[in-house]
Amino acid sequence: MFVKDVMVTSVRTVKRDDSIRSVAATICTNKISGLPVVDDDNRLLGLISEKDILAALLPSYADFLEDPVRARDFSAMEDSYREVLARSVGSLMKKRVFTVSPDELVMQAASKMALHNFRRIPVVENDRLVGIVSLGDIHKAIFKRELSKVD
Image (tube, rainbow, N blue to C red; front, side, top):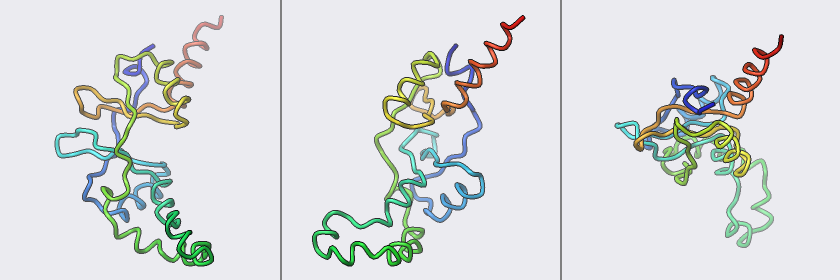
C-alpha cells in the first residue's frame, strides 16, 4: 500500500507572514496539533505546531542563567502568551521538515514517523505539498484491508 492511497489531500496550511494568533485559532477550533507552512506556490517551507507556540512561552537557557528565579515564574510565562500571538509564523516555525512522497510505501512513512517521534508527516511531490498522512490514516487503512480478508 502506498502513501497516495491513504493520505489526506485537503490540508489546512498557513503562510510564513501569518500571525501566530491565526494559527492558534485554527489549531484550537479544528482540534489539530499543527499546520504546514507553504509559500504562494504551495512549496513546503516548514511546520508550525502548538508545541512550537507553547515552547515560545518558556525561558531560554540564557534567561535561566541570567535570572534563575525569574525564569521559573510560570505565571509570567503564561502572561507572555499575548506577545507570542503577535509574532509571525516564520519566527516560530520549524524549517527542517521530514517528508514522504506519494509513491512511498505506507510502512516506510510509518517508520519515519516512529523514528522521529511524530504522528503525521507532510506528503511532498516536486517540492509542493500534496497531502499529509498520519499514523492513524495508515493504521485504519491496514485494518480495513485486513477486515476485508475475513470470511
